[in-house]
Length: 111
Image (cartoon, rainbow, N blue to C red; front, top):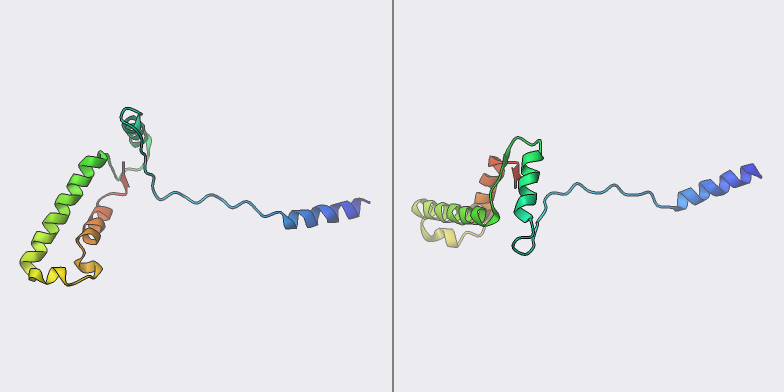
């Protein structure tokens, strides 16, 4: 009967798991051989995104900058705290953590 069919359909629907919406990606890493279009893809993404707080920088240039900032942070810390810097293992004494916090405050999107 029609009532029995609707009951069967309802029970079947209860057993089928609901689709889980995809999580919003927090980032993306693009890799590939030289000349495969990674930079072109990133340039197009950067130009078309509506995010206003953004910075376009090539990965290698960015990493050179990060290493320079880490070195500068360590040298400044060494002047004020001395060699105790290497004994303290907290995140407050970790140059990488501190530089990452500064970079995070500077931009929302690094492309």
